[in-house]
Image 1 (cartoon, rainbow, N blue to C red):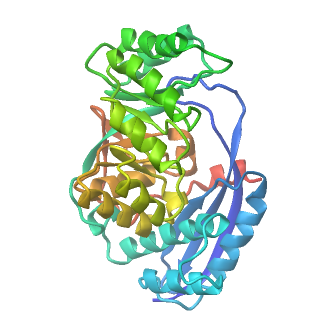
Image 2: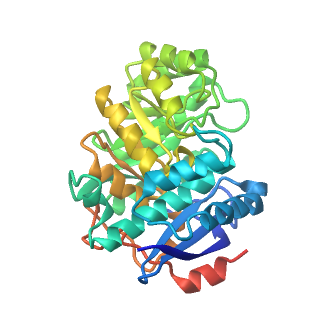
Length: 364
């Protein structure tokens, strides 16, 4: 089996909130690069990448240039192809940034092909630890909402059966610690004590702020505080982690595998969060998962549940899947949620097919 051709498409995907209909900004879109990678026996693997922003055209070009290098290659030789990519940059260890973002789309597509070629779902091909994973609602409880909107959204998520959900602090303006705590308390008042509530800071606090507000937040019983300060401030994160009883999650902003080694070595987080696009695809995600397991740490996903459900389900230390559903319209069918668990299927590879009408609708 050889790779024979490819197609790369730029899309503008709506970032609306289909879970609780509470977007911060209606009509906002995210530029996404979609990939179709085809073999000589008719198998098509699909991949996705983004974070290009205004450089999305550059990212598309990078995906095309790397995809061109796969022509004639055996798609099962995933590490060989990765080495070929790295060598093409003049850096045997590979670059980060646009290179990693582009490589991720191809790596995902290669694993999709591999699963389809042996008629096995990716979650089973990678290890098959379990076929359902806990999932939490994300994207409905953003910091731009009023307290009343946040409570309405939380109640809606409960009505849809979610047992875990994520909100945000680091509110707009110049909030006091009291204001920050009020936001998470009004949500806890609606959802009760049994629902797991996570809170994302998106790197917006200094370590001392995180310690101060984090201690005040301990009465609200957060399941984790996420990305409390700069992702590469491993020492600052470690100070926060050591000071708080609430578990600290982080890592989604890191590129490649090496930064996770530093983060884990410094005891910067209690929960390792990995973005599959920034880390370098399925291959690199699984390497970080093994690294975290060796350190006795759980691992969680960032966005794209339709793909990340597979890797979390494959790992013994997989904790939960972020259910951020704004890309689901791109596919004909995606995994269902039952009783707060994402259900994996026996469909081969990613178990996904692009919805061609959606691709045409969102084409940039």
